[in-house]
Length: 571
Image 1 (cartoon, rainbow, N blue to C red):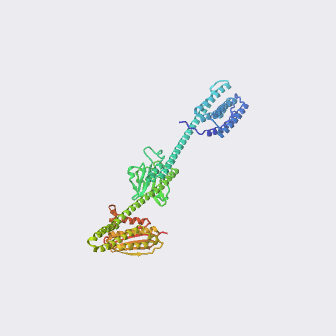
Image 2: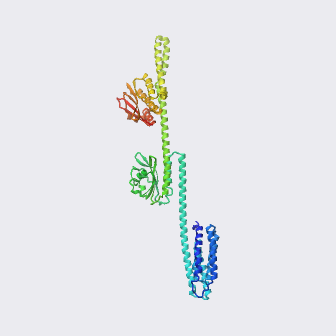
Image 3: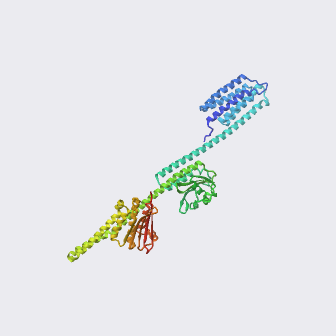
């Protein structure tokens, strides 16, 4: 992997900015060395200083206009080295220029290139200083080489320190960039996962897939923070009949997956009361979550309630053993994912309700067809078969006993009329047009008259004129329940009287059908419906729900039956 250095533009500006100081100090410090044998050339010093100021001005402009290629950095470093040697010559090989512009050139090489380049620069400048000192003083002694040696040590130390600092800065920049790349990668993965989840939810109504996606996205990137032995934990808790249960989980122990909690206290209750995502610590202190062994070691967590309006589905818990593993940004991502999932749960629930309602409608249609088939078989079909048989019998009497023909034809006529009434009654109950034109009371009256012609019981009506109080749907449901109840009475009750009542009470519409027959055990009958071929009582309950009402059935063996429909009146 290539070595990462600080951005070039910042280094160039820094070097150009710092170069002004040694350029101004080097000529001034040349006069501090008062050794008599040194010969200082003021004109050369001034010329070098002005030249240095000019080329540094050019370098500074290049740095700030963002035009500073690699060759420019090498050229200006070479100029700094040459300027350092020039100052040494002009100052009579005094060490003071070496400790200003020379030190700067050494640090520049270490910062721009590497430590070895800085030390090489230090050797060159120290060697030039030593040779120049020997030559200028015409003689060699240990005292002569002491200043260049000390200068070399100082320059070496400066180059080493600069190299260490640059290396640390480079490593820091590399770590920062790596962390930024990891953050961008996690963000990209989360965004991709959210997009995939949204696409999946648009294409399917499988809420289990939505719940799985919640935990996958919420835990994304957390495993890098955990130790190999410990994994981050994700739990989705939903409300059930026995409290909150684990709908799906990640890295949860098997015994914890079967655990249920009340969800009425501690952190869960607080999160549900605020309806907002919450950052929490130390789950072992919570009375509810500490029941899960997998969560006791977790030091930080996010709790997000799954709530839409007044509907509360459950809560999502994303936990880590690392202290302060979650940020506000992570919390917002998890909250956004959970909001999307709640919508999916709502859609899935609506879809499931629609499927169940469709199945109910199909079952009711099948039951209606089966009921119609039974009624036709037990009523008109038997009567028409009897008519055919008696016609054949009358035909046989033409030669054997002509005197009996008139009596048989009268009986046959009565049977045909009764069959016609049965068919008309059945047609009326299938589509009571009178209900749409004159209302429920008129339809019930007409139905009672038709049933009463052939029934073995007396029908008593107590009907209120409801006017426009009820919509057509409620009237249709009420009529169907009356027809179903009377039909059950006709088949099973063995009664003498039936009372049908319609009325209003306390902003409720009441329909009641009562008989004085033999009665039955309601609970036992409902419990045995899976072995029965008829669903009459269930139809009474389900039809009432179509208009937000309810059906109550009260019966005791030997004491008759009372069926009551109660529908709230709405504006």
